[in-house]
Image 1 (cartoon, rainbow, N blue to C red):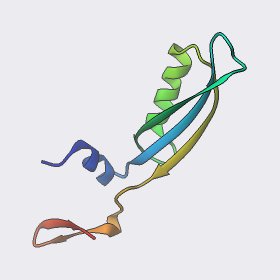
Image 2 (image 1 turned 90 degrees about the vertical axis):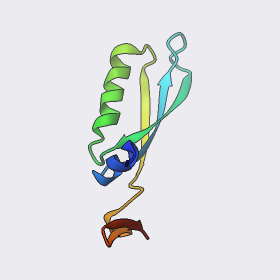
Image 3 (image 1 turned 135 degrees about the horizontal axis):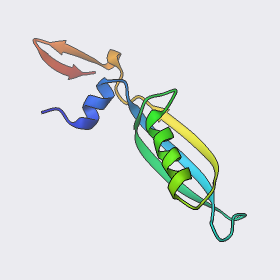
Length: 89
């Protein structure tokens, strides 16, 4: 059975990491950091956008900035089928 994460990568998802800086609710001039990591689709990042929409609706700490890094871990050129079996290069 293929793992869910591997299947997502085959659909074009890549590992996305967001460094989120936000102001503390009681001290908005002090910034705190939160690291978020999920598989997402570049360049629109629908999974990250959904999370940030949730943050703005439900979490008191106001967003200051978001820095995003994204990498497709498996690319089509890195695997092939040999006698019906998928192999990685």
